[in-house]
Amino acid sequence: ADYELWRQSMVWHRSKPDRYPQIIVQAKSEQDVIEAVGYAARNKLKISVRSGGHNSNGPSLRDGGVVIDVSSMDEIRIDAKSRIASIQPGVRSEHLMAVARAQGLSFPVPHCPSVGLSGFTMGGGIGWNYPQCGGVSTFSIMAAEIVTADGRRLLASPEQNADLYWAVRGAGPGFFGVVTRLFLQLYPLPGAIMASSYIFALDRLETVTSTLAKIRDEHDVRRVELIVLLMHHPEAPADASPEQSKICFFTAFAFEESEAEATAMLKPFADSALAQQCLVKMENQRFSYEELYERFFGLDDSAGKMARYAVDNVLTNEGGRTLHALAEHLRAAPGKDCHVLASFNMGLEQKADACFSWAADCFVGCYAIWDAAADDPVFFDWLARSLPMMDPFAVGHYVNEVEGRGHPERFRQCFSAANWARLQELRATHDPQGVFHHYLGHS
Image 1 (cartoon, rainbow, N blue to C red):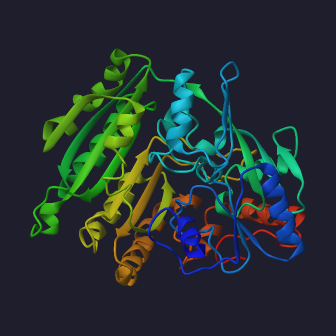
Image 2 (cartoon, helix red, strand yellow):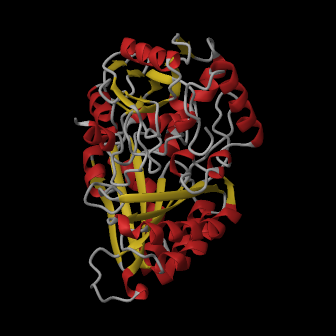
């Protein structure tokens, strides 16, 4: 009787796809997962997996088959000596951060507190303090416990089932198994978190990008998380023109041992044209992780609000040029919550033990966000028109934030040709009967 409530709850946001699984199983334990996988295999029902439900495509909802919802499996165990967190797949960002902080540790958790960590890390994971924590969180997966299509429980690590370990580090929503536990590398808890923000009118974007490039050339700021947000001014009058209402919001985040060290890291920005020419500046602000969640990407912010979503992105070494290519497109956005976000200092490298495929400096994402289902065509069209604007600067894409509903080829483009081919070979080996759903549009 409650099927529709369960179905809609599989997707966190309001973009509830018109896809209807036959059965939804809420697993409470690894044994529940094993039995659900066995049931689906015996009855020739395809499986999808849901942990947090934040992905804009809603990949856990498919027509027919079984959804295994692992969101209730949320145990955390921390070995402070080895700095390893053992987490079940339903653990959320704020939950891990709270438990780790009590042990003097941290993790590059998602910028939004309610995001599920298994889907986030398996698809790459761009989280707080990424410059000092490996660039993307998937590289912090040390091992994983996996239930395979034949119902076996396997440990995937560099020493055991290394092919599955390679796949779990980056495959994201196309992974061909159920992860029931992740072992994550933790990092020392910063003694001080500070941020300096500078706001410009959007037509002064060149000042921001050129000054940022100059600072990075002349100073070692590789430890600093650099975020540029092109957005609608939240206090702009309703009748304001696009020229008046769109702004560039730049923030540098320093995660250091002391406030003195954090202030020193932020000083090049305070001594630059960013501070001298901005409309508003907020320098050397002190934060806890909870306050970061509240101040940036929270539920009251356009980036974290409950709404309908469509997202796409590039990983690039030309972040400034990509932002300029999208600036005018943002002025023509059909809604005030649409925005463009760039994360510099990613420091991404290709790794032989991860299917995450790209070496890049910057992530740039274009976000369509709106409220009414009747407006879907307008917002999907706006996002689709952004792709040829940013793709010329791409070295690759981030699989957790591509718009695969109308463009299933975007999933393939999230991997190098060699890594995509290897993923298909491993799928054929570990799931020869096709028990698990592929990426949307590829099943």
